[in-house]
Amino acid sequence: MLLIGEKINVMSKTIGPAMKERNPEPIVELAKAQVDAGANMLDINIGPATKAGDEMMAWLVETVQGAVDVPLCLDTTNPVAMEAGLAVHKGQAMINSTSGDPERIASMMPLAAKYNSKLIGLALTEKGIPRDANERMAVAVDIMTACMEHGVDLENLYLDPLVLSITVPGAQYQTLECINAVKMFKELNDPPLKTVVGLSNISNGALPETKALLDGIFFTMLACNGLDAAIIDPLETEFMNMIKTIKVINNDTVFCQSYLELC
Image (cartoon, rainbow, N blue to C red; front, side, top):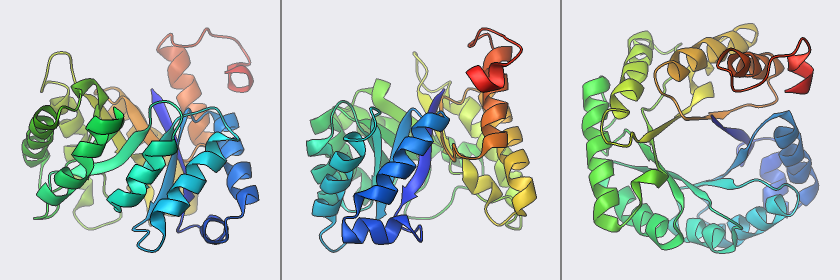
């Protein structure tokens, strides 16, 4: 399971100003903390970055990779900033993200092909949020087809069913449709395509004491239906302990009495 740390985000009250001021200390500290907690990739989210986004993304990539030895998931809607980050990235990066929107496909697919990067394909179009697993499947087919047309290796594609907060009216139904979509995505191709979710979306707006429980149970249900990767908060200790336990039960980690400390 690929675990992508979500914490380096321009919307953060501490990380956002650090990005704008080019202050590496809080960013490096947070990057190291996430990797130490179990993240094996870090999401670097600079948002639209309409002003000097290319310079910011390149600086961030070099700053974070100078501190931790993990690949990065570059998160911006600005294709110029995205390419600036890809150009300086060491190893194989991930693009977060394209979608079924023709404009997004046109801006991100060529970059994924040029830099041989991994690519998140979000089951969303310019028309809005899919209503069910079947509509998500239709968008996934379009994204897969676009990958083949642009020369993007399907091995690099991660399909995202689009997780919504369970606190939104009607979202409980959508939550089940996300699980069904992950299962259906695995049947699209042989070998199966990979899948990913922005996991913490499920608990946005929920009471703080229920967050780890919601994230953990939803993650377990997704993992049982073919999930390959998740964008998560690795500093959420209770949730990470659930992941360590799943690894033991799945025989991915050799069992020991103190596995929560040693895994």
